Length: 577
Image 1 (cartoon, rainbow, N blue to C red):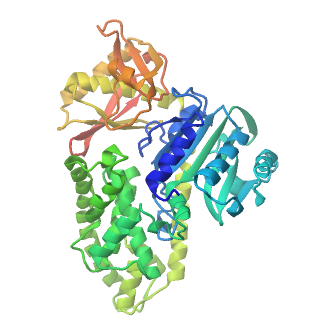
Image 2 (tube, rainbow, N blue to C red):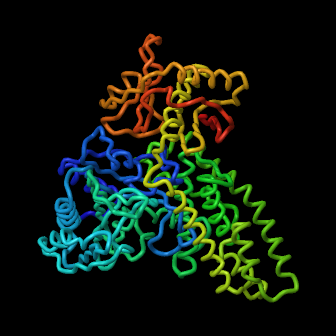
Image 3 (cartoon, helix red, strand yellow):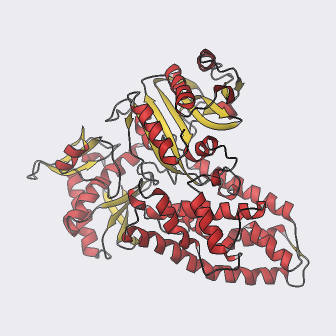
């Protein structure tokens, strides 16, 4: 009987390997080529180019376990099922098998491998509307398997996408065990146009998702995800460090938030992100500060969120290179979190002084003032409530929660706005910038030395951001040299060639790989050819694209900023004109 995380993941990947799926490694939490989101939010996210038609080096059937971060509802964390960081099992068909096979395999895995009684299964399918017909094909397949409890629901429940205003989308069929969703099969068969029409896709894809944490809870017959093995060591460490028991509803909520935020913070910090006031850094700062504020309220600040780093790394050390407990890995993550906690310690003291000023000679704390403490000083509602209780001050909790809902709605709207360019931003401008990062990578190696390696990148329509290992600030002369080399190669009009080969052959051919990234056994290699170079090329990198076909298409390259982002890691921001 499958009970553990390792058993579940191994069984899932083995099952789909036997169904001719290639197993691909988990991608980074930081999307390399998609500026529309802050983090990798699902297993399909790194596969966007292939879902849109690009050929995958490993074929049309893929499976993986992908680490994910979802941030739109951080303020809701604290219940039995909500997580900021989670792992998602998934299998994909890129224009290969369709609904019948996907559903039959889902059913087989649930009933034969996981031993779930089919009588406990409830299925939902798309009910149909003016844009697409009722999904009778899925329902018919479930009926043929002997599943009796099938319900039809509308777009709000059984339709996926598009991620933005336009792009691939389609009906899905969801699987529930005793009322809890365990798996979702999405059938991408339409493309939504700017005019709001739903046009059938030439390449129809299957995209599935099964959350590891939720499935573990179901398999172990637990109503609380936080009692599974991927959370229990963290819960026990929190109980030990802060002398608090996971018993009352209030304590459970506090401990869940601390555990969730600490785990997500460790994974984000392990990617080299540092706390800041925007983007991924803002999310990391929010996670650390919210959990630290709760710990502060436990009246024992001798131990901080950073005290949980070792326990969290232990859980995942065998699966993720960046969380292996080397001294370098541990120190890097611990220092990022510890430094932010120390900064926030000063903010908490300032917040307490603000609270005293706001409530001086008053018997009520207004919702507006409470929200100031929440938003500007990072005080969770639990702390605000406790402060009010101690000083016998009434808090208008209902009005505060209305303010919070408005804030959450704005956050969700902003998050959705990140998808405004569709499933992924593969515009002409981002394509030019993407190819420019390859030129930049090689130019940095030529100016600063061959030890320079890429440590991450992010591209929007406005600029490219490129992180690399280097121990000091670049001089103005070095920046100019790098810029000149890139523009020289652009002006030469070099051809850009894509090839597929084994990872071993790619590395032996001299192709560059991003530091710490995991790659499948077969990869795409992009070569910027240069006949004047004795190697026959200027740049060669393992990459998924997209790229221009000739460097002249890029335009003029200009570095606008060079800065430090972490110990030994520098960042360049550049534009093309």
